[in-house]
Length: 317
Length: 317
Image (cartoon, rainbow over all chains, first blue to last red; front, side):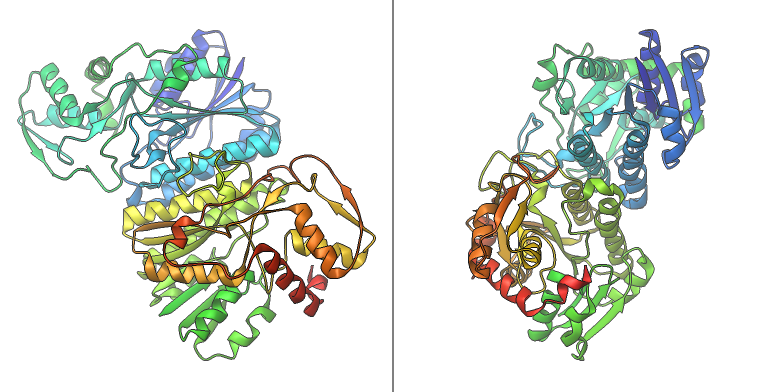
């Protein structure tokens, strides 16, 4: 099939591109390289079935022209940082909500009618049911990131009803693995590399979090695209376990053979809008035959090994 | 108190302005008069406690300056038309989602921290539970209108968590009464005035709908602002009954003493994204002591009487 991938040079996007090319598909990658990195698509660029377009999702007409003929759009371009929403609310609105709208309008203009979208478990806010199913009670948003992604989901759904689009909405837990460049594990690893004697931890370290290995995430997306036939398909993606922030610190320290003094900022939440407990019910995607291959701990170790092999990633930021 | 009302010259907005002035409050009304009508604020304009600003919600800095010192913002400016979303998706995104974002940012800039927002029962999509409570299962959006309002709700909630705002979200059924200028009853009345012999009905006429009289709606908003003290307060607003489109046609025809041939376009839905059944659970707002004074039928009759007294409304459109 022909796939148009936004955020193609990003963490999940570039892994998806490589997988699609490996599976024999044709791929157009679209990325403005604001956070995406050219090195992530280096090998893809040497593949004749790959075409890269450096462009922004705001360039709606250009995007429409570039995606014409695609069987499906995988819209992964986003501001993926949950934490700094209150520093710049505009960023989530523009790069998540409006970018998604531009992608949908480009699809309408170019006649592409199938879209996969990276949403987030953050749309559940602080749920009362764990593991949290897709049809949990109507949530209250607690972050600009979650709000902006929920708005994106809502637009996809309205386009499904209004314009006959077929939509795939994936509510991710935190994704880990090769090319991972932001989040807990990245921050902890970078900090311990600089100073193995101490580690600053946001919150009390007892926040319960979920992680999924990026290749498992991509398996799930491709499984859903192949096997789910509804007009609006919503899937939680995660493993069937969670861990405390303290657990992941323990694994990281063990791996690095360091024993830092832990300096907790305190409180149940690491920052305003941080969710103290994320654990998604993945029965729906499992019912399609998907299973994650790596546990959270293995995903974290795989990530650390990748970061060790790519120390230059820490220079970029 | 001092109240800043967006959409102040609109249907619900102008009624709210009049009520607030009648109760002795100070009001700044903000409206771009795109669908609002100056005649609706004629009497308000003669009140020294009212100030009108003709402005657009996109003018964020101006709005911030005008709302400075307000105790609460009532954000009622919106594209209130559910039906034509697919004709111009941009309209819902800009006039509902982005307008709400601009209002929130203006509040942040001016230090106002309390906001009431007119959302809609359409955010429930096609729910499975009737009457539908505020914590119904996580919905799937079926209209651009609902999607754009849900995005507005989500932003309010994120601002509550991120910036300490206190937010009041009201999910309206269709509102009726004085200054009502669009929707079922308006369309039917206008059509029968032109041609009492026949009436075109979108869908099969068996869609079950809910209506609320505008003064009851305003009572509910003011009751919630006075008595609900949470950070995020979400309320369904409606009566404890619903009617079929055919019922309202019957009441209108009886009132007008006409017996048109009914020409149904057919189907369970009147248009793409039309919800065949809207009936909201209002136990939460009732628990604050609020009760609607008019039944749906009385609300429709009150509306017809108003339309009869104001035939010029039909010239405007």
